[in-house]
Amino acid sequence: MIPLTLALATALLFTAWGYKNAAYYSDRGNVLYNQNQLEEAIASYRQATQLDPNNSPAYNNLLRSDRCLSSSFKFSRYARSTSCFGSP
Image 1 (cartoon, rainbow, N blue to C red):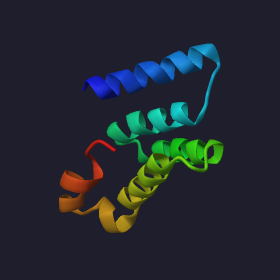
Image 2: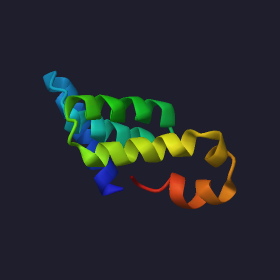
Image 3: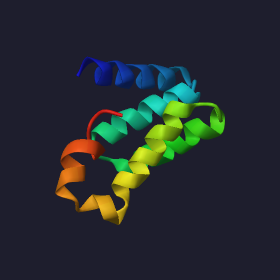
Image 4: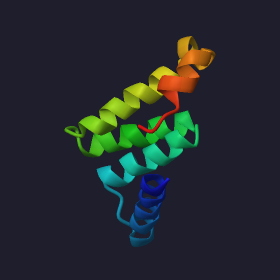
């Protein structure tokens, strides 16, 4: 819970300063992913990868989120309980 809280606090602080970089969007994506808001998480990870094309964690989380959202994983009880909704 502490990393999620820290990520959210960091995202809010960057927003308050008007400073949005790849780390902001990656952290925001992590928060959204953990709240099961996959479409919004994907959008944040895409923004992170556009701002920093070498951000491999954002690419990995983007692919993971997209896979979870796909119909082949969306209704799979196993995928939902193990690989899709753990921390990115």
